[in-house]
Image (cartoon, rainbow, N blue to C red; front, side):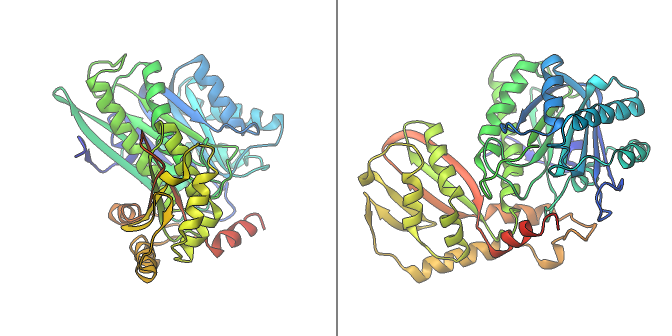
Length: 436
């Protein structure tokens, strides 16, 4: 049983944070497109970013800032334009954005971190961004998490948010987070933006280590379409406002905090995978018997990312051969006679041998999983709607009822998981029409 409880509030649930989201005119649709997260005090900051060699200016900016200074006061995020692959102008616009929000908040520009999302090759509409900053700052609120979560979306159908609370000593510690992501989702990192706030006191080195491990077990373990983006950013702040003793090295208390941080990241990551463009269900791949956790995760990610597996799940086809083939090409050696595959409760292969199973019942299992993971149409937003908030119970239902694929490849101690979604006709339609 988890040693924490879920609370309301998202990224403003931890003490000492405010956030806001507005429509500044960056998106042609007129939807919210500018978000701001502010800590009342300078916070320890950590980040994990895209591994792509083609990067947005905001990624290089944040990396440079975090290398020089392991703290931040604010995070500014724009949606609509990725500010990637536009040459030196992107860097200049990033600097100007940081300076503009710093002046409005009366803080140093070196204490501002940036994130962008949208169409690659398009410059930020700087006139609109700068004109919107006074309104954005004025909208800052301790209840502004939902507004910020809406303002960072692109092709997402729903917002993604969570907050958890635990007790260390005699004081509570809270972690909150919001994220966006729907397409161009693949490990290292998945195409997404995620922002996490915490009110614990943690040293910069330990906080970065915790975040990197949490990312490996969450955002780096999801896939939608095999494409990694130019803008992927996971940024986490810890401002110490819980007034708990500072954590500087791993301990029982630090392990508890990291477990909760991982839980926040995992919830957001699974919500992204379930919200994959055109997806009808979440897929969870569980792999055991590998020689270590990394190898198990590699097999799991390969299966979850297989277009053939994803297509079969969309067609509600219990095609175990595609699962076995994906496991075999994952780059992790194992003996074929040790392979075991299950789909839900249906055992399809054992000791490398196919087994007879009730195909119709397995088909019904896939249909039921998709039905349970769906969101009522009246709660699903489109890119022409301003209401993209779905109640937390509905979001939890979507990610609590995945299609389960269980694979064992031997007798080793390593186990790992990955999450993905099915591949539908709508994925092609969404991406074929993305810039037209």
